[in-house]
Image 1 (cartoon, rainbow, N blue to C red):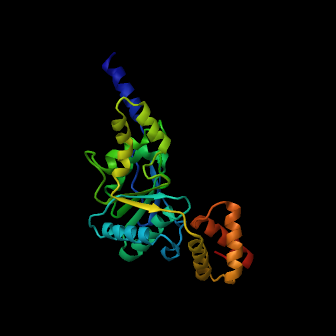
Image 2 (spheres, one colour; image 1 turned 45 degrees about the horizontal axis):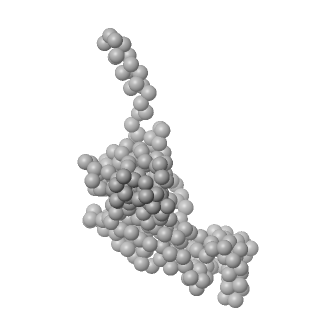
Image 3 (spheres, rainbow, N blue to C red; image 1 turned 90 degrees about the vertical axis):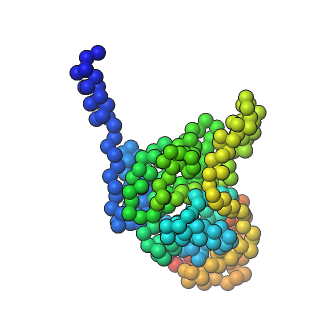
Length: 279
């Protein structure tokens, strides 16, 4: 094959390669969403979040994540954080609320959300974030992996152990319903079918070990559930007697078959609509 043909092939491949992402206007917003193919960071004008004071029943996780984020915003050592546990208990809401609170205190703190399916592009994203004029919380919601999912390998080197690793101005926060980021039956299957069971399990389970903070979220009690709703009522000026609130809220959670912060908000949304209160 002649040099001319090789040159044309190389040029064609170069044209097929997507151009590197351009740095966004970091002053346009405090939160961004990462999109791949083509790579870009889109500013989020209005973040869907609740105020930190309205997140009840998660005091320990709130205080720990708030302190870690303050340290990070001030340029001090801080850990990657994994928020795991019961669904609907405010894991992602806490990340967004803590970001808002610390950004208001310290300034210069950005939140960048990426989807789990875009993890293979994380090295390209970090190249872009490395030169950002801000401290960046890289956030992945509902992080988990199935049996044949290899996306976790893209994340392992970034969290710890890679040649470059994560930039000093980036910290990684993730939420998951599973502490080890994968189903228990998947872990048991690895133990039973691998030639070296311990090594097969360790390769996957070690991913969660790379998070310095593990913050657990557990189902709320009925009193906590009612307190959450009462907090919403006071914050938004919705008037209802304790007796009526208790009767309605308990019936609402019974029809849903679960009790959580998310169910509390869904009941409150219905209540506010019936009372004519805009949220």
